[in-house]
Image 1 (cartoon, rainbow, N blue to C red):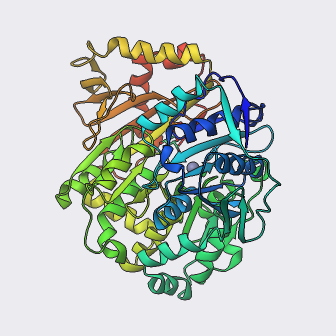
Image 2 (cartoon, rainbow, N blue to C red):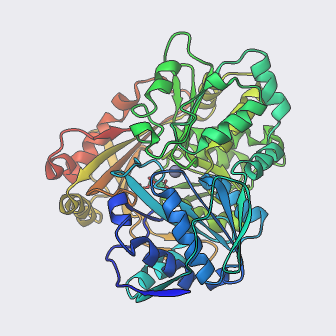
Length: 540
Ligand code: G1P
Ligand code: ZN
C-alpha cells in the first residue's frame, strides 16, 4: 500500500448534491484522491464492507473509478460492485445498495451539467440506506478535506470494466455487474407491466429522450420489454460529452422531444431523463406536465399502481416546489412535509415510514422504493396511471386541475451571475424580511416573509438558510435561493407560484399569469438591477 502526502484544497464542500466542479478542477493531482480519502476517513463502516461504485459515463468516469478502486482496497473495503463499463444510474446505485446491504455507494456524476473535458464532473457518497449522505456526514467529509495530510492507495493494474466478472485487488473482491438487471427487477415488482404493454399494443405512441446520458441502456431494456420499438427511444447511446448538449431535460436541451410532442401528429406520451437518470419530465401531446403538478397527480393516483395499492403514508416536497401535492395530501388525510431543496432531506422521512412519495420542482420525484429520485420510475408511474385510468396524460392533468385547482408555477434562473452581486440580492431581501409583512404591492398583500429553516422531524437536525420565501394573502408566493450545484459564478433561482381554484381560469398562459408575482419579486429584491440582467437566463 502507498501513502501519498497531500495538502488540502479549498472549497471541497459538497453542495446540494455532492461535490461538483469542472473537470479541470477534478483532474488536478490529488483533488479527487483527497475527497475520496475524506469519505473513507469519515465513514469507517466501509472498512470490511461492501461498496457500490458507478457513474453516468461522463468524461473522467472511467479514470475516477480506477482511482477509487485502488483507494478502496487500501482503505480496507472488502468487496466492491461496479456497473459494467462504469455505468450505473443514480437510482440504480440506490437500489443496488439496498438490495445488497452495502455500507454505501460512490456515484460519479454532475447530473444535468454538461460533460466532456471542458464540462463538469462530480462525486457523491450515498449511505447504507441508499440515499445521499445526510448533512452531518457531508459536513464531516468537508471538515476532513480541510486538514487532510495523506491518502492511501494500492498499486494495481487497471481493472477491465467492460466485461462482467470477478477479480481481486490486494484482497478486495471486485465484481463487474450488469448495470440494469437489479433496477429492472425492482421496477417489475412495482408496476403492472402487462397493463402498460397493452397501451403500446393498442397503438399508444411514445417518445423517450435519453439525452445520450445514462438512461439509454435502462430505457432500452425496460421499455423494450414493454413492447416499445427502439425508434421511440432517442439519443439512447451514453456518450462522455452527452453529444455536446446539456443532459438537462428542458425545452432547450430536449429540443427534439419537445418538437415532437408539440407537433400536430406528435406522440401521445413523451418523457426524458437527465445525465444520471434521477430526473424526469413527462409530456402529453401539446402539454408539458410541470414537475410540481406531476408529484401531485402521482400522489392522487398512486393507489391505482400495484406497488402502492395500499395507499400512501404521506408526501414531501422541497420548499420551492408548488403546493399542489399538499392539496392532494390534505384530501387523502395524510401528512405533507416541506423540506429544503435537495434529495438528502427526504431520506429520514422515508426511512421512518412517514412518507411514501416525494418530489422537487426541479424534475425530481420518487418513492420509498429507493432513497434517490428516480427518472424512469416516474415515467413508469405515469404509464401505469394512464393504463389504469384509460385516459391520455393531457386529460389526466386537466381533470386534476378541475378537481383541485391549478398551482401555476415557474422557476426563473439567473445563471453565471457574479457571486458578490448574487449575494447582494439575497442580502437585500434578507434585510427586508421583518418589515415586509402587511405591505401592499398591486393586488397582493404580503402575509409572511422568512428565511427557511428546517428542523428534521426524525433526527431534529436543524438546517438554516435554506432559501428566502415571501408569501401573499392570496396564496401566491415567491422564493429566492442560490443554487448549490452550479460550477461557474452563482445562479439565482426565483420560484413563482399562483393558485387558481377549481372554478377559476385553468388554461391561462403560464408566464403571463405569473408576471405580476415576478414583478413584485423584482421590485422587492432589485434582482434585475443588481445583477445587470434584463431577463432570466432560463425559464422552466
Ligand atoms: C438543483 C435543484 C434541486 C436538486 C439538485 C440536484 O439544486 O434545484 O432541486 O435536488 O439540483 O439535482 P440547486 O442547483 O438549486 O442547488
Ligand atoms: Zn440528476
